[in-house]
Amino acid sequence: MHHILLVGDDFFIDELREALVSHGWEVDTVDEPNDASALLRGRSYECCVVCDGDERLRVRDVVTGFGVAPTVPVVAIVHDNDVSTAVDAMKLGASHALERNTTTTAVIAAIEAAVPKGSAPILGDPRDIFVRSEHSPLNRILDKLPQISLANAPVLISGESGTGKELVARTIHNMSERSSGPFVAVNCGAIPDTLLEGELFGWVKGAFTGAHQDRMGQFEAADGGTIFLDEIGEIPLHLQVKLLRVLQESEVVPVGSSRPRKLDFRVVAATNRHLMNEVAAGNFREDLYYRICVLPVHLPPLRERPQDVPIIAKYLMAMFNRLNSTHILGINPQAMMAMTAYSWPGNVRELENLMNRLAILKRVGMLELSDLPEQFNGATPPPPQIGLYVPSEGMDMAETMEQLESSLVRQALEKADGNKAQAARLLGLNRTTLVEKVKRLGLMDEH
Image 1: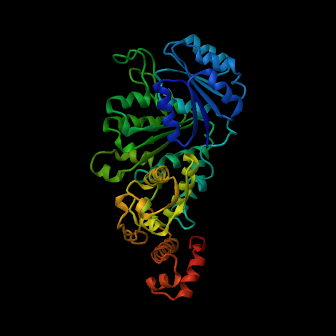
Image 2: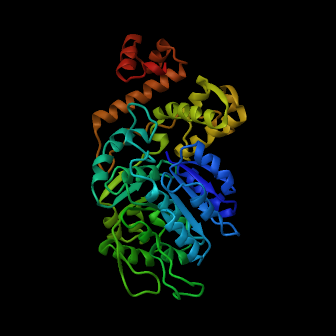
């Protein structure tokens, strides 16, 4: 996890802080260079981002006044067209100087490029990026990531919102030979159609009214690294044609220009749609689909891996206890049973938000069923999804049956409040057989 210091007091710094925190980074923010001095001397940061104030002295103060450059990379954000400050910052040791009209995505790319390669990665081994049980359906997927990361072919990550698609994309980048280059994330669904082409490919001065200077696109910002096209299914058809050419030729033509720019990037795309259905409906180009789906990765929703819910919930509660200075001691069996039975339409993101909210509101003691929101009352386990169909990518039947068995045993134990004799009766087994299954499935620590 990166630890970043932001120096500035305007709305862009606030927006940047939210973006960095959403990436899982630790962020400290101060208004003035004088406040930054003590922090830079007393704490360990991997990068300092400083945004020039109205007096246009802040960048110069931070870089020169505190000797940051030799040990802590500095990304300077200067006033538009303030060439002298940008040049001064670079001469004094800033690793990057960006103009004030930049995007948070571009700043994040600059931070990732500035942080030394030997620094702690955003995400480490793929087995660490998701909290999950020993028999989680995710295991087989995450075990493939090292091989996927070593390739340079496009990756398509599919899954519902909140399943962790960007986490996987970042892990692929961090484990690849491109890890020293930028990781540029673009949410294609959050950018209006009229602005998306310029955001992706950039523009040249005079391309349209208001284009007072050249603007680098996100593909160019990702040169030497990875570009993550989140919600790629939202890209309109007329831009899909241009995107296909960019992927085929590895070059972009900025809006208003006729000169292509050759680039070196890897594409990792993500979608919460079924793109083949979109192809059939005429909403997504078939040739583009096959171009981006060389290496498919599908993340199952949380409702299809209920065995992971108790482990994730306990992990998150411990984390939010630290962040909120709270003292939640645990989650009682009735509350945990309701959480395991819940369908989690928002997936892990919804579970994370719930744990944070409960830590803040409860503060101390055990979480009870009454502490949970109303939708958890009377929640019943969804019908088992595992093993009832054969997915298009195939399956490991033995592993799938073991996952199903583990899920049923866990549900029976939770319904019986850990009483193995009662759980055995629920499953139509004798107690000895159930105990053997509990040991074999690695469920002893849970009950």
